[in-house]
Every structure is written in structure tokens, then in C-alpha cells.
Image (cartoon, rainbow, N blue to C red):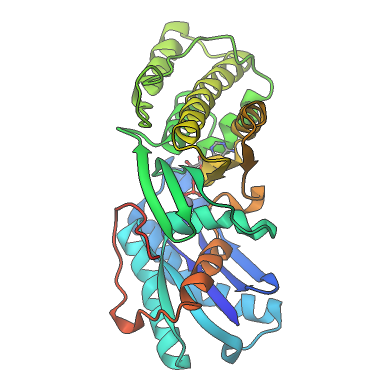
Length: 335
Ligand code: KG4
Ligand code: ZN
């Protein structure tokens, strides 16, 4: 069966076709560069852009993939968490398409889609596992007994890791989105140039806090006065090191405490070169198997939604026209 995945929870309009036997059959994303003008995603602008982009992206994906609407066996759509207007555009489109084609439609939790993006490389998910979800809006640790069973065991008390990257990039004038910009600047910086705080690492829980780091970077930049390109790179590398260090320490402690042999990364920040490197090395040292999504599937994409939806559809689920959106909440278990 070919599943259409629709992702419009934030600023990317991303659609993909996925078949459980063949993997990703086609994918297309329209990025909204307009938010660069504002230094962050403007919700009303995002939902209007989704309205404009969705149908052309769908039609272009059909012709690029050599498929007709009747070839679609089922539809999955991110229905939360996310920006309510953006989610509504995707969900309304999904329901209209499902109704007109007489096909099932399922709402997919955006974070479950990020977690299952790990399967887009072709490997089946190994459980029990601990998953570190790091995106623009979330930083959390989940214990997974099996696919479909999620226990939230830790989360951020304030900023998400991606949000920290974005805010630090703004302080360093590196542009938007901030994560890839900090990642790139850090390549020519010294990660030991500034000793930034590693919050909550002495506490025996799996929660995070990144707002203190953001303040420390701001105070450091103010103290310097003039920011040379080398100073910006050094601060980027040092802040990235602090974020990755905390994420790795907590994830490894969580895996040890729950006695699991598999650790997964998920979400936009999973694309961070240093985080991947540090987590992989620490897992290897501890005899834990490390997994991360292909770089291409770390940030928001329709393929991860289609992949997750295929699992729900295979259980015979159909949300029909009752499907609604939600703005927040952890992943709920369904097995
Ligand atoms: O998962 P995602 O695409 O959207 C949300 O669900 O939030 O994550 C976006 C976040 C942004 O904060 C972006 O700056 C961050 O992921 N990000 C990165 C990198 N690529 C994207 N952060 C650090 N290093 C990267 N290479
Ligand atoms: Zn996301």
C-alpha cells in the first residue's frame, strides 16, 4: 500500500509517498524562506504559505512519482503538536482528500513521526530503547518498550535544545534557522574557548534546562563588546559543546538506568554534527548501540509522517472526518 504523508506543523510544507515494502517512493518539500525576514517563524505567515503551497506540492509530487491519486492507499498527517493554523491546513487537506478518494486517514503525533524517522534508513526499530528527541519545540527522553509504547521519562524545564541553538545564533548574528548556522560556525571554533554552564547534570533526573546557557552566551557577548568572526565561531563551538555534553550525559544515564542496549536520536537537532559524534562515541564506550536518522530526515519531513502512518493504518485505524488538531502533549501509546 502507498501511504501519503503530510507535514505542515511548522514552516515546511512537506509531502511524501511511502510503501512499507519499498520505503520512500517520492518526496517534495516547499521551505518557507520568508521567515528569515523576521528572524523566526511567524505563525500567521506560515499557515498562509501552507495554503498557497500545499496543492501545488501535492500535484508536483504526483507527477514526479508517476502516481495518480487513486494509487494512494491511505493518508497520514501531522495533527499536533505544532502551530494550530499550520496544522489545520494540513489536516483539512488530508480529510478532504481521504473523503474524495474514500481512503482511511490517520492523525500522526509529530514527535512519534520524528522517532520513527529512524526507520527511513531501512533498518527496523530495535526495542527496548531510549530515544532523545531534540527539535525546535521539544527536548525529551522517551523509554520505548516497543514501537507504539512511549513513556516520557524526562523533558526540558524551559527552552528546547533547538530553541537554544536558534537564540544563540541570533545573539551571534549568524542568521536563521540558527541550528545549522551554529553547527557551521562551530567548525572553525574552539569548543574549549568558553566554559559555558551544563545545567542540571548533577541532578538525578532526566530533565534539561537551556535558558541559563542562553543568558550566559548573551552576557559573554555583551562583555566582549565587539564580536569578531573568530570570537563568534569560538562561542558557537563552546555553546554547542555545552548543549551536546548535557544531552549526551542525560541520555546515557537514562539508558543505563532503564537498562536498555539501544539509544536513538530524533528531531531537527539530531542533524547536529557534534551531537551525533559525541553520542556515538559515548554509546560505543558503554557498549550501547547508537542509532540516528539519515541527515536528510532529521528536520521536518513528510516521509517520517508517512512511515509512522503506515504502522497505524496497518492496524486498521481510520480517524475519518473526526480528526482534529492539538497544540501540545507527549506522544501517547497505542499498543
Ligand atoms: O524537528 P524540527 O525540524 O522542527 C520542529 O519540530 O521543531 O527542528 C527544527 C530545529 C530548529 O531549532 C533548528 O535550528 C534545529 O532543529 N536544527 C539544528 C541543526 N539542524 C536543525 N540544530 C543544531 N544543529 C543542526 N545541524
Ligand atoms: Zn519537528
